[in-house]
Length: 399
Image (cartoon, rainbow, N blue to C red):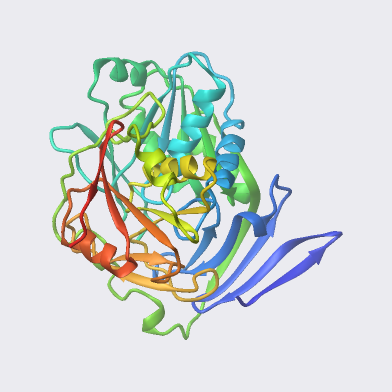
């Protein structure tokens, strides 16, 4: 990676990195964790935002150790202010659905009897469910949905909640959250506070404007704080940018997805794993590391399985496929273009995983078995585990 760290006082706080797409400058404030242990730089194939702070503890684009992910979940949960009344947590698609659910579970464990509600945003529609729409303007696929809970008790929690906790891996402009809060206030009449829990708060001086923009008090809990500026390269070739960013959006149709109960329609309990699954997998003889791989937005089941295996002494990493196009540079040392299991005809990717790198690969998926999943499993020499609920997961023969 072409990055120079400039010393300011006794600690390096200013970072300048030359990407294929431009020059990124980052000014760090004091943070509770070091930048190098949490993030690295990557270049995005996206003209709207041609760089990426790639997280090492998210379980998305980089192989992550479950226990280190748990530590991040707990640290972010600890930043949530006390509130009177119910609290709603929202994990942001695609990248932070697992992080959001992890922070929700960490907070719930620390506050027994509090009965919080977890929801995740999504790029897919659940048939028959009401939804709110909002935009993530800098994204390659900007349209997002937040479905309303279907159970009456969860609807009542949403209406009575005084605080909403929005969870994402990185916060810069806050535009997406401003859009989401505007939509939420139509269904959360008691809402009196917003808290943003994020690995990296890079809003800089703009953070003080979020309350004004939202029209409601907003606090931020981040493990890192700072601000960035980016200068696009005038000579960046077409191979470094998507000339048609719509190619990564839905290919002219909305995919409707049956919900397996992991957050799109809300949940109030921590994810549990089917009886016997962990014991069976932990008891298998494996010479080398295991990769537990989520698919797209379906990340948390893979984390839960990886965490349980690690607790039983298995050498395990957690990661997920993604639809986000990133260049081969910096923190991305290998790219696999993989088929789309969600039926959108959108190119998916797996970063920093080479076929044969892991002794065992377990792919956790929510979609029904299909040809793209079979192709992915064949490429990686992997096994498919289809999760349909907390109580049921079926290993699918790869053919």
